[in-house]
Length: 182
Image 1: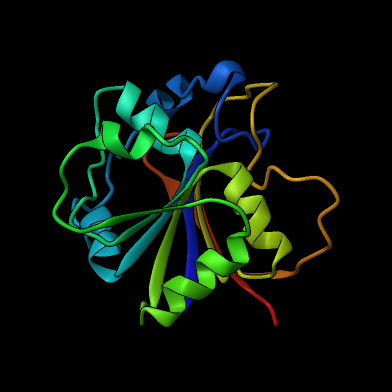
Image 2: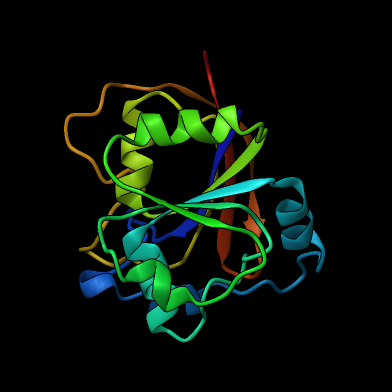
């Protein structure tokens, strides 16, 4: 199983501002980007793992769960969050506790390319377990100063990644892609 952390962050490494403010995402444009890049990525994914804070932000923002056609593992202790999503085409499996066990369950279910949809806490746990295989990040032309970081965890062991891609994204942002050096 390959775990891919695909996200956006500010220039200072934050995936949200204070109070989980995501308005910095509005500074990222896709001028000149191929229209099929995002659909191609989603088409390559066969499961999703998402943390409670990220899904709560989507639901509270009126987005619901836009990837209900993919099997999803929600890592959260919030017993009401799953119900707030409503009906989806594919199951949302809610789990709490050890992320390693959740990732093992996803792999045992036969999934090969899994999108780590967020947030930084889940990404930090996955990195601590040495389970992150690829990082695709768009860097916004914004500094936030506070908020959760790309890998929001304390005492992480050093993990080395190799750079696959760095390029301009849109008119003012940058896209970087790394894969885990093992």
